[in-house]
Length: 293
Image 1 (cartoon, one colour):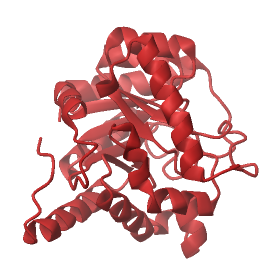
Image 2 (cartoon, rainbow, N blue to C red):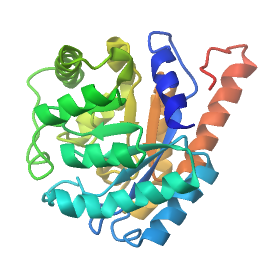
Image 3 (cartoon, helix red, strand yellow):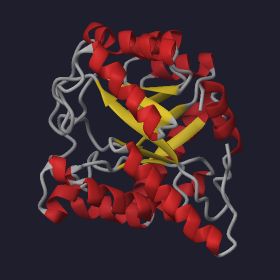
């Protein structure tokens, strides 16, 4: 799926139809020394490019490139440092493939340079609350993922608290961000929403989000979810990061069954198998309600 095809998918995703059984798979490539799962593995450009191409071979529809760790307790890096990590990879990957490239960043300067280098999706954990980022995305007509996070990566897991139903609170935030984006000139069909699994949430919050994922479709926009290898899985199953594949796939399946639009994962091949198996089950019962690309 290239950038233009991804735009078409966003515009035509039947988010109001229940359910949609074909989720896109977003493969993760972190060019960071300190990400919680794969930090330090792909700091070298040839290794990072090889990994991205392998994820494409495994069936990824989108490659999400991140140059700054947002794990709980992470400290921010400079814009220049982040640019030096992500732009060479975006350029190298664009030379090798027309895959839709997502840039996982909160910095306006990184967004701008990433789009110039070939990125077709902005994945912003701050949901464009930075006015300069909001204006940039509006001016470029680039699709954007708006994520909910309570606090910052440094503080988000310091006793996260919700005064009401966690899904209601997240939906209120997302509705406000969607309205802010529309007021800035961003088309609704360019937006994706992400409830922010693991970002300012306790274990019970994350499980409630997954169980009730269909409630986030109230915004009539595709829903993205990133559960891959996260701490909640480790706490429930008492497993280390490299032992969380099965838990990740179970959470993914529960979300996909509720009409998930995009699953963000380190384990693309296995996640594609889950989607294919779920499609086969539903098609065996005559249910052909799925989006084809």
